[in-house]
Length: 323
Image (cartoon, rainbow, N blue to C red; front, side, top):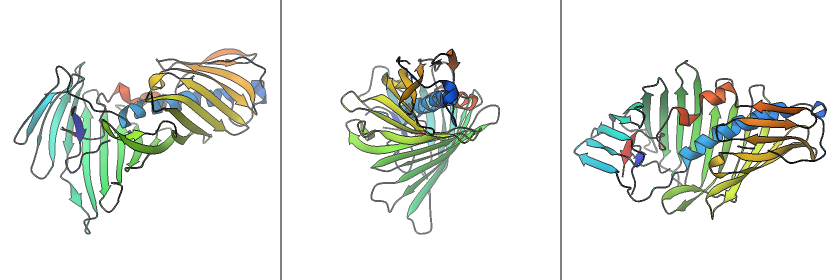
């Protein structure tokens, strides 16, 4: 199997959008509560966050690729991953350890993790890891597995810190049947999403695309919107993003693979209120009916915590390699 990363106690197999149609719509001034502009910014922020998290949560493993090398001698593990990352670490008999990852581009990650510990009843096992990056970013993760759960229930609680000192808190819960993720940014905005899982070749935990992921995004001002992401199991891609919010606001967007780009429209009570598009660089454009176009970007907090800007490994939620 291709190289993955896992907790010493147990392998953690496996944690948009958007433009335009025409038509008669409601003028932006008629939209009360959450404005079209606010909803567009919220769409872009939520999509930017989810785009990165989905890449981390759902990863398939396949055969070794040319250049991929893994070595093991005693407590020493070293090698090169399929993406060109070089790792070197040591793990003690009790499961604790430390090591480094050097990624293409010279980003260096230094990991340390504790031995697993149990509660008094030996029904739960715990472990802690710290991941520090040469660009000043830091990740701390506390892992727990419920040994009484028939579905191998695991919880990851973590905190990511950017060089400015601001933090993002997250909780990821996974069992054999379902994922649930909650992400809270320093501006107090929050993204929650989850959905059913299935096992497929190459991944013990894989989304059921047709049933999709559902959740909510609440912005820094407390305005919330409901989200639904669906796709195709045949192509293993997300294809549609839907939104609902107060004042009769809805949206539907057609996605390209990886939520990289999308096109769609915002509606109020069924009438088009604006068209929104989103490109691969996370730059959005909102076309307001009768009011021209304006740029739409993720919030500063969402931009700061784009995971692909500071976590290069697609299995970052666990500190050490496994095979």
